[in-house]
Length: 373
Image 1 (spheres, one colour):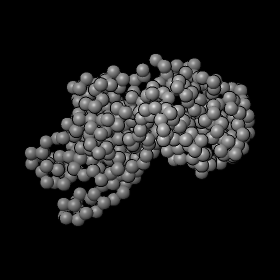
Image 2 (cartoon, one colour):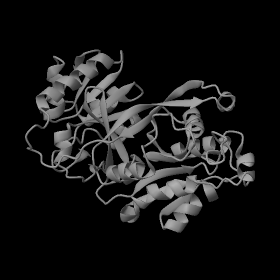
Image 3 (tube, rainbow, N blue to C red):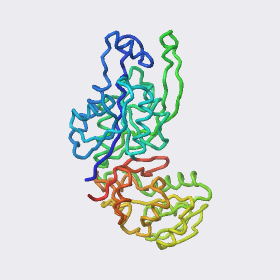
Image 4 (cartoon, one colour):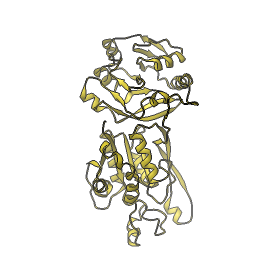
């Protein structure tokens, strides 16, 4: 089973002002400590991580030194790597932003962060739009829609992801109150942006259970979504398989069932291409690669689509790969990860630990990925 790499950021000052009636922690951490406030972010993070201890052999955290994560992970026995350093004993918003940037560069599948609305603002200011994050509520103010309802809920949601449960991606708003105005008795909220966050999905207990989704209708929904989002001049590579063949049919496009086809501006420009033909079409040209999973097995690269070679994958870019699979098909994996076997171990290891899966109209799931080790 592959190791799941996850980022962890703790804002050790989050929540300090609540118990001492300061209505927040922004800019008043020293005063809160002077009034006898006790840090609570580490305790709240511990509650979340306790849910993950049964999976300790399957997770490696990337984190920042001391109170920002390393101390707690060391104490709880989680494998972890420490990135960066702290300039001062008291952490700052800048430390949070630096941590986000470093974790993104390391390619973590998910950034878990503990704090309040101010922390969410700091994360929002540094994170990429497509980087999944999840907040552990530890602050005084939790108005943002990027936090789980409790620390344990955050831990259970991450556990579900690592175990291969279906976890939907959504957009969560980052909102914060003006604490200066709040201390003057005025409530003034402000929208600061949105983050990509996982939502609680559903396990597929039995593939043929009554009331499950209709694959045909899902393909209609997916076709509507793709039709709404075609990018002019971009070449869309459709891999083999009945899912993508059915998706193309709902777009009014005839593709080969077991071949690889290239579509641009709504029409097939190359059908059943070889590896060389495919490379020539995507090399130095904007492209998107759509693949599906082999039902019950989970391979997305290296089984039946060898035309999508390592050099083709590098030319397209892993960021431009999307897996298309219904929840029914993912359910046949029974929690096992999707798999890649490109023939290039270095490239395989560059894939993320979890990939985005298009599963319905504007419905994306985050699903674990491995390479058969």
